[in-house]
Image (cartoon, rainbow over all chains, first blue to last red; front, top):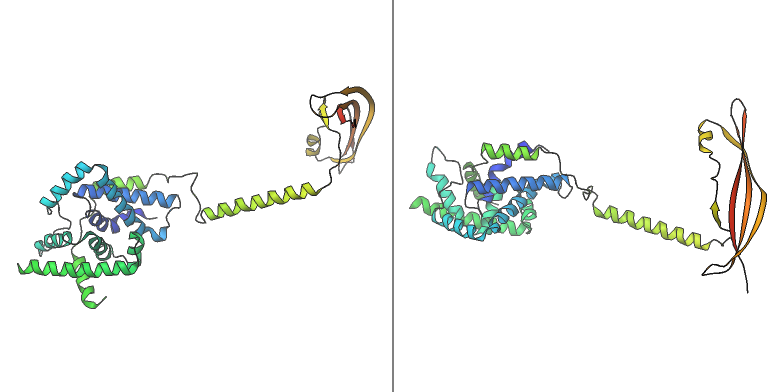
Length: 166
Length: 163
């Protein structure tokens, strides 16, 4: 297993995925690290198969991010408040030289999506996963994943359009 | 998905998410390069069903063997309760390449030691025997022979019918 390649290829989308639940980039990095280690252990002990490693990674990162949230409810509330107060304090995306406002606008639009739509959109657009793989990772049917994606993309487009008008 | 949606997806993908920092990536790769966690519970890809199948097969064989032995008629054999000298050691000779050509055991003396009354069960007669074991080995090429004669003592308890 070429972990180096996997970390390079999948790392950014996984960090973005973890950011849905975590207020800081550093915490998202921790969740991604934990997700990778859990996946590595699962493969080493035969609980996961290499062919289905990417959906397993998403599931492991999701689980690690939620564990991180549960660890300290007080901290969670405090950080959630910070997150709501300063949603763009730590950007989700790399700055775009041509249009620096795009990344910030996209981050706002993503954060305005319902969580179940947002995670499907992130997995499909930046994770480049099929609906089958998304369904497998989130334990939902591929049709449900496709439906959430469609609604999420429409909402995202609307939100971005409004932002460009204002 | 229509083309419009695909185009929008492509546009979104151009905005790239922030990845892991160099330090986090190094730390992660270091953790992933550690020796694989091995667990004695780790199962091959075939999974637990193979283990259960093997266990079930073993149980079936054990049951079959149990039934088979129970069907055999019981042969009354007087129990040997004590051996004062071990049986002749044959293995070292065999390892020299010799082959066994003759083996014989003869009772050279027997003594009736009387009847014992155990706390539970039937009374038993105690017979003490003196055997003479004789084995003969031959070298397969040179045809030299070795004869070993050894005495052996044994005590046999035989149950008595008092009805």
